[in-house]
Structures are given as structure tokens and as C-alpha cells.
Length: 148
Image (tube, rainbow, N blue to C red; front, side):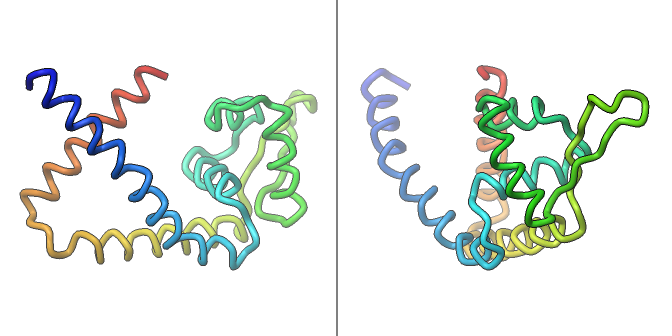
């Protein structure tokens, strides 16, 4: 790909990504707001659901914010009983955060809604194109994670 073509590609993608991101979030926001949680809180719930029990520092690292910043977000999740604190039996100074059944229900509901949205968006796209899209998105994800 010559330089002018990669610049054109970058410009076109630069215009599309914010629109795609906004529209996908807009389609999820109704489901998220049913439980009066923010998008950041949902990301944390999904991360804890996948990982199990996590320390605040691990959640902060995932969100790329300070531990102090994530503490406030997690505190609201604790108050609403979406997550709970678990104290280490050997060292009470070690506190982990674990998702509750109420938090898991939100994650499951939003995940199912997101899955339905993807099916609606991609049902007319060929299997070959979907496979190519998924392969490219995985490459981009992996590149971003390596750079982080």
C-alpha cells in the first residue's frame, strides 16, 4: 500500500470509527440505564465477571486510571450490590472485588442484547466477509494490547 493510499485509508477510518462506536453504544445504553449504571461501571462488571475476584489495582490497570479513581466507581457498585468486597482469610489487608448475582444478571442481559445487535448488523454479510472482519479485528486488538 503506497503512502497516499494508507493516508486515505486512515482518513476514511478516522471518520467511521466514532460513528460506529457512538451508534453501538447508543444501542446498548437503554439496557445499561435500566439498572442506572454507567458505561464505565459496565466495563468493570464485565471485566470482573470474566476474571473472577480482582484487586482494585487490577481493575485500575484494566481501566487505565488510578486506584483512587476506580475506588469511587467500585464503591457505587458495592452500594448497589452489583459487586462485593472479599477479604483474604490469610491477610485481611488484601481486599478483592467479586461480582454478585445481581451484577452477573446485568452483564448477561447486556451481553445478550449486544449479541442480538451484532446478529442484526451482520446477518446479511457473507460468512467469508465475517471471518475476514473477525480476523482483522483480532489483529487490531492484539496490536493495541501489545502496544499498551
